Length: 76
Image 1 (tube, one colour):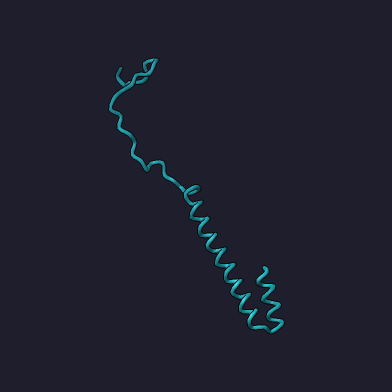
Image 2 (cartoon, one colour):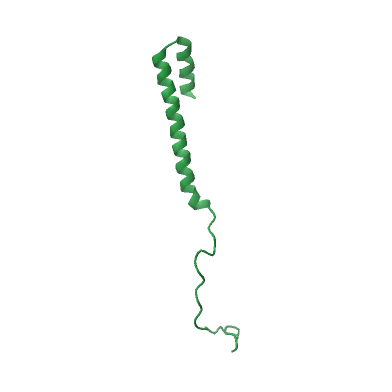
């Protein structure tokens, strides 16, 4: 906001040096905003992004471990 006010005052005073100065400041503000927005979106992508549950293969079951009550192993 401040670079815009400075640019307006420099334009009213017809001062080319300060006009260039405040245009550069405005470009810098936009550049910092864009860099911050891109960096924050890249960081947040891993936090809120979709991670499929089937990325890792299911482990192979090679043995039956009985559970009390007789319902752990099929066939006895």
